[in-house]
Length: 396
Image (cartoon, rainbow, N blue to C red):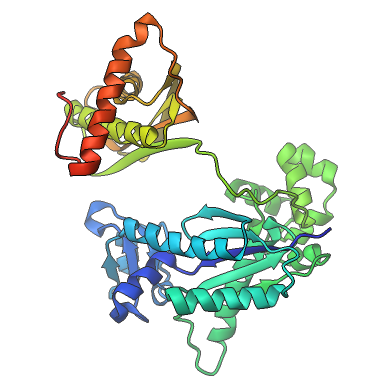
């Protein structure tokens, strides 16, 4: 039996939230992100800014070169998370089968709901717009792959049609909506660019172009065995996806796979004590998040970027799972010292923990001191939660 999957994407989400807070921003070119003189990047930009070529992930300094009147708005991620939660609650009121894939995107399984998919989509868009003042675009298909691509096509089509209209106004959000009937998946995908397909990154796209493969339909018509020879198992996935085949279910709860913290410095850092202080604070935040969720991890990962943008990651697996700040910190320090030369400037540094699961409480004689430290950290967590993070700190 064919499924009906709805993909919802909140249009220019961060900017839409900022426009609610400050209506004067509506219709104006602005970007949410970091300061241009501090290596800030564009996290989101308004559709008015996009008309100047401004795009997400672009350095803010470059965005200001493209749009001299660009307004730079600092991000307020606590606010975006709260608004996202309100949207997801609204989706959950429609169906229990909701898979949130990012702060502004989700899949819903609306199979057999007794109402036409178009009516469900239009009502959902209208409710989110009227009640939360947020624009959204929707794609509907028989699977997640095609539904997400439909959302992207709907956005582009809405903007294109609006720009060709009498008013010629493409400043506002697209409010796209595309529904792909079951059985028409390959027809819908046929003429679309190959790089719109999941699994086609820049390198794969370049190789496909060399072979004369430019559209998803071209991939679908290429012999599957040859794609496997060229791209390994990824070639098999490419062929199936190009046919519009995707059997993945809606996953309503996502298992926590990793927790991490990282920072990009305003100025490259050479001082080892400063780097160690950063790692200590990051280890503290990661450990606290693990304990808050009653989790522990076994693998500690260090991410570091030099001044020439070379980025390295190194990881080590601990003997037992941990949510101790000290364990994470000391593992990260050891990793850093193994790869960093004396006085080598650092642009970015980060610490993460993976291999996450429930903490193991069984202790041997040698774990007693570690357990004392963990309990002390839990007491500190409680005090900081109640009175603020500056109320108490461990001695360095």
